[in-house]
Length: 67
Image (cartoon, rainbow, N blue to C red; front, side, top):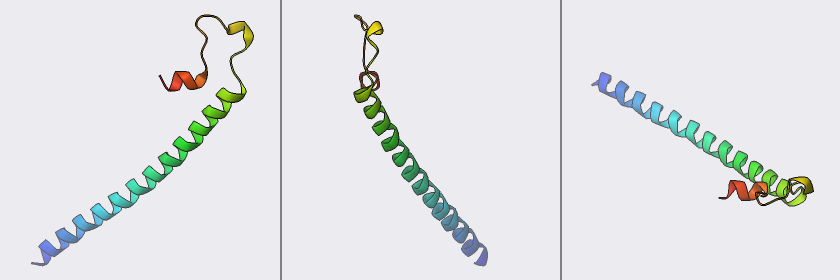
């Protein structure tokens, strides 16, 4: 009986640790995504392509990321 309790405790601990780590990773990636998105939007609004590169194939960085 104590072996079964030990195995169940081990499973519960593994699931709990996995949940905590996955929650931390999701939060970190969401934060990084917001930061990168804001940087891309700021860059594409402030700095369009230089005039010498504007031709039929010109694009903004934001358009490239939202195709």
